[in-house]
Image (cartoon, rainbow, N blue to C red; front, side, top):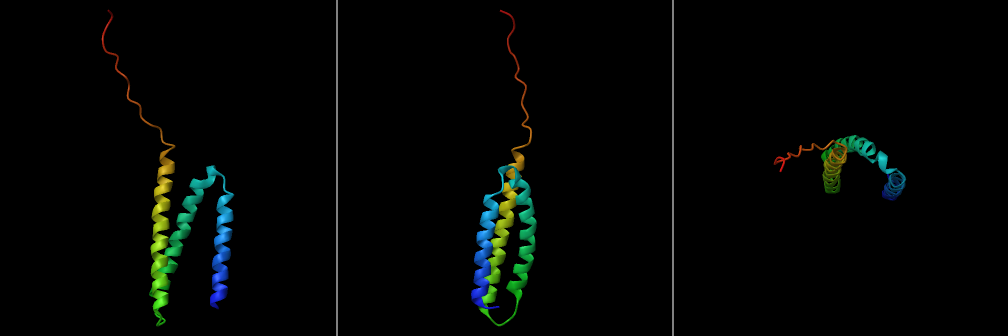
Length: 104
């Protein structure tokens, strides 16, 4: 593919992704984050394939390696945020308060 076409697809995907995420209500962010983590896992596989492609160009290796790095950051950060958000819904244990002293 031509470089300008690839850049156009990348730019269009960026704008589309931003618009879609901006319209998601806050109640759906946790399930959406879990789904995007699964998609990022697929992205990691594609990035590893791109990084390992032996076409004689160092640009492919550099871009593939940076894609693997960024996708891994996305997955790890997504799981950390999801875990933290789910932790907000857990019941907190309360310790019973002991009453000391007797009748005066």
